[in-house]
Each structure stands twice: as structure tokens, then as C-alpha cells.
Amino acid sequence: MTPPWVHPRLSADSPAEHDGHKAIDINDLDRITVIGVGLLGGSAGLALRASRPEIVRVGLGRRRSALQRALRHDAVDEITLSYTRGLRGTRAVILATPISHFASILEQIAPHLEPGTVVTDVGSTKAEVVRLAERTLPKHAHFVGSHPVAGSEKTGVEYARADLFDGAACFVTPTRRSQPDAVELVTELWTSFGSRVMRLSPARHDQVLARVSHLPHAVASVLIAMNHDLLDAAGTGLMDTTRIASGDPQLWRDIFASNRTETIRAIDQFEKRIRQFRHILAREDDAGVEKLLAASKRGRDAWIAGKLARKEMPS
Amino acid sequence: MTPPWVHPRLSADSPAEHDGHKAIDINDLDRITVIGVGLLGGSAGLALRASRPEIVRVGLGRRRSALQRALRHDAVDEITLSYTRGLRGTRAVILATPISHFASILEQIAPHLEPGTVVTDVGSTKAEVVRLAERTLPKHAHFVGSHPVAGSEKTGVEYARADLFDGAACFVTPTRRSQPDAVELVTELWTSFGSRVMRLSPARHDQVLARVSHLPHAVASVLIAMNHDLLDAAGTGLMDTTRIASGDPQLWRDIFASNRTETIRAIDQFEKRIRQFRHILAREDDAGVEKLLAASKRGRDAWIAGKLARKEMPS
Image 1 (cartoon, helix red, strand yellow):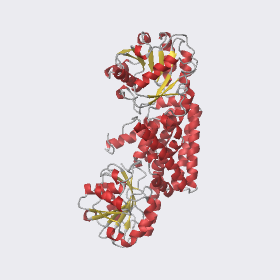
Image 2: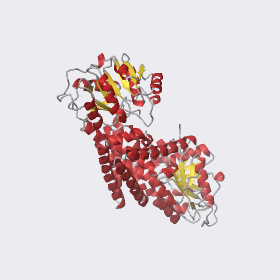
Image 3: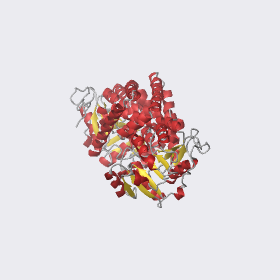
Image 4: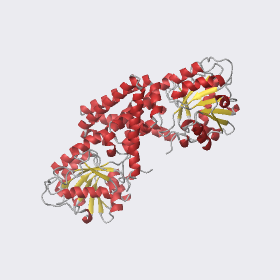
């Protein structure tokens, strides 16, 4: 049941520019490097241990204390601050730092990547990230962008869980330049963590996410901002509606900055809709209000029912 | 720690118009009639049994099947379809049907109310309701509006719980006409269910609720409506942001209709704020975006921390 906006095999059918260094098969993988071992990187490490215990997980980062916490949580097997050591013998890399560090990290890993190494990331926006990675990494390495739709308002390896990606959507965003084997490896990796992989072009990904994720975040933040002095009067409704407003401000600043155009477009579309609602309410068309509410209830209930039926969420 | 917008003893200090029929003291109450035994009425019944087991709870309604379910769930002790029987010997009434039935019910109960009977309701809007009740009920009865901020997207006595109101806010909305003893009785009733009672004028109540409840509901509904075809791409963020959009459309149509002006005003204020956010984002003021996100995160985190500290929500 593929949604209409998913391009099922966008990349595998397209001619790929690559130099013959085939990406490794996931079953031959004996070492993965995770750069940035926080909530998402740590959860990838824990999921790897659960699904493919034979793979050695290397944690690479800038702060020894954070790496040591990851080691204590068993999110990785080895830790290092050195790109040389961290990437030696590795044929797959998961980039899991904040997006704003990507440019610098991609430049620093570029000289150390072995031929055929597959690099992916977990960033919440894809167009800028994929463009940057394809421009920065050497031809003999293969970048394929990922965006697992998981996480929470918590940050840090302390909250990492082996099942964080289980049942969650994960976007894989190949381009014309992607190597099919690399796309396959990245897809299998997320599938082995229990994710539902959906392939989208980076641009389409950013359009979709602006509407279902970045816009709601802006909305939640504004709902708190305008009610600062009234929160004690609010119930669980506003609490749930605004849960995401407790997310990390720097992380979300980066997401908004790297998906500026589509987020603005989504805000404009939303504004038009809320103004329609206001108009229906103002002209005392209460049947129209009910119709709109009922359609949304049906849409949301069907969405949740589908997730329950596919066991993508606990019942 | 009373919020600044709460008028602590709005009514008790004001002269009340009443004809000398004192409201009963809660400790002398031996019978309460609950009209409409769904989620809220049923939970009031269960909470009464837990806090004041000596009080006989009478369920009054229009459909025998609904009343029988309430009886099976032990939400009431007796059931009846007759206003005469349902109100005989009763000195307190909780009106817990949808708001749209209030006008007709108030007219029908008016001739049967014994002198000194206190009537309250659980409606989500107050200005229209209180005006209607004060106009319709006889002078020898005492209406005091209530709005317990509890419930969920579920409806029906099946979901009723004795602790539904425990730790929740409950607005009690007296006017110049309210009898102080009646305000006291209603306040003590909700307090005995574990609610934090806040007194507000009906008009101020509707202003506040438009912002913290009715606006978020409209927003959630619109977020679903604009993303109908993209829901499979959404994660737990959108799911929580839109939980309230699964609420009962008729119930919410009534809420919007009976708080039209304030809801429209709240939508306008919200629109102004989201346009500001859009503007900051569009002019590439990413520090400004982060500042706004950080202020909202601080506001929300402090709100939740306060609730946890006061044990108003499970940790």
C-alpha cells in the first residue's frame, strides 16, 4: 500500500554516476561508524546490536564524555575522537550529529573514506544535506540520505532505545547520482531496525516534511508563546498539542533554516486553511464547522487505525 | 499561587440576588441528580461514590439504554427518564449533557426544582450557558456554572473514571447574581473530586478557554485537513499535535458556536503570531527563530514541571 507521493524505486531504475567501487552487501558488513552518538546515533547503535550483533559499532565524536556515556549505555563497542582511526576498515557510516555540523564533518571524513563506503545520515531535512554531501564526498564513496521519523523532545544517549525506529517511517532519499547498491544497503539497514522505508526525492521529502512536521512544530511553539500567562488554565489538550514545542531549539532552528522555503510555503497553506475555518465560523455556518471537524476526525481516526492494524504503534 | 487572571472570590464578596432559600451545605447533601450520564456525568457519579458514598446518585436522561449502561458501570445508584421523579428530594443537580441540549433541559427542570436546589453544569463554554440558566431557572434555585477541564477524545460512560477530575483544573464561574452558599457548594464538590478550582467570570472564562482550548482544537483539525493525503509520512509529532482533532465533531461544533466571538479573536491573535514567525524565518533571522523556540520550550517545560511538582500529572 504505497502512498501515491512515494516514488517506489526512484534511484534503482536511474542511471547512477559512480566509479565502479560497488557498495558492500549488508551481510558482509563487519564494521559501522556512527558519528555523533546522541538519541538517534545511540539508538542506531543499540538497534544494530539487536539486529546484527556481528557488526562492530564505532562511536566517533568530538567530546570524550559523550562518547563514554554512549559506551556505558552499550550504544557502541569502540569510541574514538580521531577520524583516521574511526573510519579505518569501515564500509558504512551513519552521520547523526545536528545538521549544522554536517558541512564540517563531511569535509573532515572525505579524505578518510575507503572506496565503496556508504555514508548516510539521520537529518530531518534532505535537499540541502544531500546536495552538500554529494558535492563534498569523493566519487569512490556513496552518499544516500536518510531521515528516520523517530525521536522525541528528549535528547542524549540516555534516552536511546534499540526499538526507537521500530514501526517508524524512514525516508531514504536517493538522487540520480546514487549508486543502487548503496541505496539498497541503506534501505536494508533501516528495514532491519523495523522501519517502514519510503523512498522520496530529497526535494519532495522536504515538501512533505514541511507540512507534516516542521509546520506543526512552528504552530506548537506559537500556541505556547501566545498563551505564556494562561498555561495554568490549560488541560491535556494543549499539553499534547504543544508537546513538540519542548524540542531542542538549536536542532529545530537548524531544521527551519535548512528547509526555509518549504516551511514558509506550508505556513502559507496553513494560514489559508485556518482563515477558511474562521470564515465558516464567523458566518455562523455551524453545519460547515461540524463537517470540517468530522472530516478531520475521520482522517485522523483512519490514520491511527491503519497504524494499529499494521502494528506500527502500541494499542 | 493564584494566576493573575483569576478573580479569587469574585462572587462571595458581591451582593447576590436570591430569595432567602439558602443552598444546602455539602455535608447535608443526601441526593444528587446527574442529567446526562456520559463520560463527564458518569465520572462525576464515580467520583461522588468515592468521595461521598453516603450521597444517593440519580441518573436522569432521555435514553433508557444509556442510563442502564451507567447503572451497570456503577456511575449512578438509580435511573429515571422522568424529571418529576429524578428531581424529587434532590438539592443538587449536575447538568452533563451536550451544551446544545441545555436550553431545553433547563426549561424542563425549572418547574421541578425544590427551593434551595443548586444547579451546576460541566459545559466547556460559560457566558451563554450562565446567561441562559440565570434567565430560565426559578429564583428559588441557584445556578453556578462549572467547567471541569477534563475528558478526552473518547465519549460515553464506558470511559468514565472516578479520578477523571483528579488534579485537573475546574473553572467555577459565578456572577453578581450567584448565591455565595451555592458557589461554595459547587466549589467544594469539585474540590472533593480532586480538582483545582479556579473562579472566573463567565466572560473571562470564555476568553481564556478560546485561547488555550478552542483555538488549539481548530488548529489541530486544520493540520489534519491540509495533510489528509500525507498522513502516512507523519510521525508521533503530528499524532500528538492533532490528538484533539479526534474529538466528537458535534460536541465541538457546539463549543465553537457558543464561544464564537472569542474563538475568532483567538484565531486572529494566533494568525498574527504565526505570521511573525514566518516573517522571522523569511528574513533569515535564524537566531530570532531559535530565541522564539527557546522561549516557548522554557514556558512549556516550566508549565509541565509545575504540574509534576504539584502532582497534577503522573511523572
